[in-house]
Image (tube, rainbow, N blue to C red; front, side, top):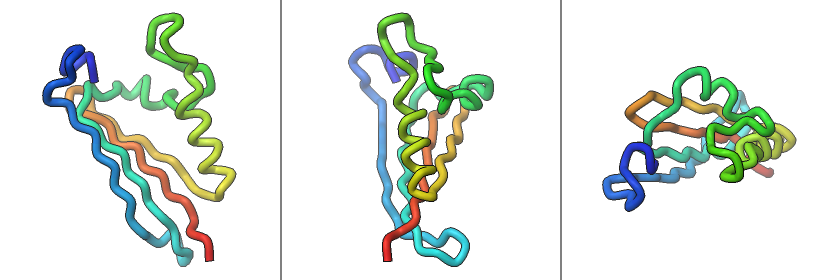
Length: 100
């Protein structure tokens, strides 16, 4: 977000949406986190959930955030997807089976 909006973040936007959905025939919950930041090129988006992958300078990130989230979602029987457009922003969507 700082890349696109600067250190004060004026104009930056992050939204979170939680909705029930179906995954096949099973009830699930979809959580979408969207921002209007710088977006990611495909080369970064494709690796964003790899453990220890980061685009931040040394000492500013471990590259474990999305890897940890993806693994937790997969262990719950769900899935994580990332859509991103450079200059427009990013949408991270988690679909997690609902408990009965």
